[in-house]
Length: 210
Image 1 (tube, rainbow, N blue to C red):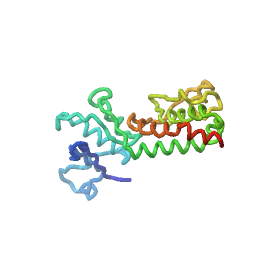
Image 2: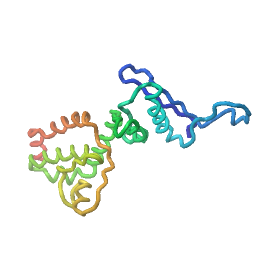
Image 3: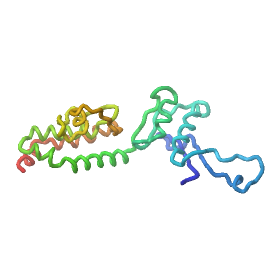
């Protein structure tokens, strides 16, 4: 467990550090039982929560000490720190930016999981029909981009035997909770271009012959 942590705000335009919050749970003077006035540890809690606390402290003092309002937070997909600061200047005043590395990892993981689970039922069941295979490719795209705020399962096949968990839950009249945070529009546009290439009729024509 780490006793020390550091959170910083860095300007995207200049690369300069605008503010810094250094936190520690350890005090050498207290450990040595030295009786004098001194600045002791400034953080109590788990090491995993340091990022959230540090980000909140920096955003909270930004207007008073820096005369700034930070508009964007750059972090990984499930960042708890963002939830601490997104409403700090008012409702939804801070926008979250995704780290492309985390996006790539998440998309890759979801696609591999989807392929492993449904490679027989989804693709082979559509063999012999270019139109059905095109629909399957498009459905896979929207399925992978779906988020808890914006469900995108309209193209997924219906029924209790569907490879889509949302459609299976809908068929069984169960409540469905989408856990994925989804993807930024900029990333979706890039991925969509690749999926559209997979819809090429000449490519699918060869696949339909298998």
